[in-house]
Image 1 (cartoon, rainbow, N blue to C red):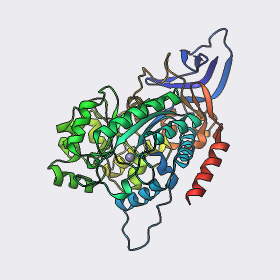
Image 2: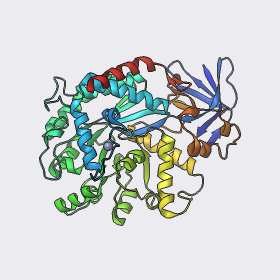
Image 3: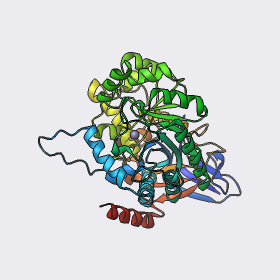
Image 4: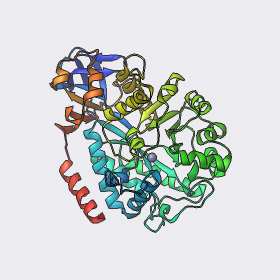
Amino acid sequence: MQFRFNGLLQQEGWLEPAYVLVDQDGIISAISEKPFEGHGIEAVNGFALPGFQNAHSHAFQFAMAGEAEIHPAGISDDFWTWREAMYRCALSVDPDQAEAIAAMLYAEMLRHGYTHVAEFHYLHHNNDGIPYPNSAEMGFRMVRAAKTAGIGITLIPVFYQTGNFGVPPESGQRRFINHTVDAYLQLFQASKQALSLYDKSYLAWSIHSLRAARPESILELFEQMPTNLPFHIHAAEQLKEVSASVAHSGLRPVQWLLEHLPINRNFFIVHATHLDDVELKGLATSGATVVLCPGTEGNLGDGIFRMKDYVREGGQWCIGTDSHISLNPMAEFRMIDYRQRLVSHRRNTFDGDAAQYMVNTAYRQGKAAMGIQHSNHFAPGQPLDAVVYDADAPLIATRNSNNRLSTLLYTSDASGISGTMVSGKWIVKNNKHISCDTIREKFLNALADLK
Ligand code: ZN
């Protein structure tokens, strides 16, 4: 079986037209500008990009996206008051509801062109804070939801121990907490079993943040955990978190990470919004990747990541949708660029073709965040995971290979996507997920029960 696309985006640019030969499992066997003899052709009137990698998700938060946006006069609302609403949401969902919410979210991600998600998963226990008989029950539900939707998933069980720097957990955090390193190690082993549910599932590990774990526990985990898995952690999202870190240890969060942990290419630092010059240079040259979540960071008023400075120092990054207030990867890229333009009063955030640079970097580092090896956007031996943009969309129909990707990145929305495929199978076609009716019904029922 082969597909013919008007164009296929590789790291070095467009191949057009492009014929992609796949085996019965949807693994690419060969790519060419000419058709392969003796194989049927499905002609696709569109331009294929590699499926986007969503490197940071808290699925249950999708249930409240857009609900915390009414701000009564005279009452201050910030990250910390939003977090109270988020905790109420976290305390209310049961495993069935969490699975239904995640399946809907993942179907929506696919509709926007994401084909793999890293689920940063800390909603572990029941509503009383007691582990389920299977301590990884909720993680299993995330993997099942991903399978239902047809998205690849990297499950990231999160170690969450304390309420703040040196402060015991509060009641609202009871579903997240593992009091000891041993309890986390047990959870991690149990989470591994979830991978048997779905052939597109992977495992990484995480500590929620420096404020959510004791330093001695963090160091002990680094002795116990496998060193070949991606490690994810939130850091320096909020100024209050930076000042609390300094008060507690004398060090800013990223400074603490740089001085205490063996930072390398397997480190994925989520947000890293507030960096001083030393931290910025240290992080950019450490091999770590920063996971930017521009929609959520803007929604929560976190601050502006120093992208221009970071990239100039050679820093690596990828994207995630975090609270899922926005789900369009192109909009995330635009926000990354525009926040720099707004503060610099310059249009050239990145040298050269900004769209190509952003898509290439976010894809390459996003794959690494998932723990998946790859050699190009599309290559023999890799599954055919693609998002296809309609070749007849008015602007796209008039563009050439020099400006097609930038037109997509700076002007498109999900309506320009004619389909998303995972392992050579259409999961979304004409803006509709193939199982959207059943996934949507379960989601609506779950939300009705929650209300
Ligand atoms: Zn997060």
